[in-house]
Length: 336
Image (cartoon, rainbow, N blue to C red):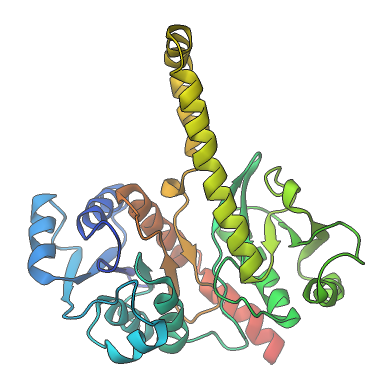
């Protein structure tokens, strides 16, 4: 394909456009084989691009006269704010002038826009949000973490298939282990959704389904793909984030509690920083909305430049490995 273009919505996040441009600059310095389109306030973006020395040959500014805020009703915002940065970016993915969209804005609006503007791939019934979460042996894909709180068994089956494709082609895990999140390992455990989904997943020949996984086994890397509906997934994700911050705060408190611990902290600072960095969102990229005709990625509302850079590189990898095409192919075979 021609050089891919990544569309970045610079409005709606907590930190404004500046960390977006800094992250873009860092990503562009790392790889020269993609271009960027930024959507937002034209004068502000032009000033930031010049300030940070972003290559003008590889970046295009698209002026947006409207902004979707966190207070807007998602569907209404997508329908009414046609000149917003988010809608303009998603529309460019739809018409093919961009191959991916990254936004730190209103999550509900981005999911609605992904579905209504970009559109679901043929055969895909629901598009799940799928972030990577750290484990003791690597990363696992949590699917779904926020898009479908009323999912049905056939939706979870599709999530499992999409998750396996993502883990194999983006993360590089061969024959990834797929599990459904449950309150026990036995088949008779779980709610009706889990009980109805289990036999359907066991019948699938094109994924490596290993059965149920309890929440306590998730941090140990018990499975590469964690299948669940969005309510459960969002609770897992938020608990992960909260525990990570609490643990980091506790360790810092201990290390600063006396002269001896401060000396010890100095000796172990680098390895400790490296260990904690695995629990930060900065280097994980964003949460892709899988199963659409184009790539849409949600990053945190308070994202800084490192998370923006990571999300751009994630999109580049996604496009280069044609993950969307592989998902399209997998589901078109089902509907053929």
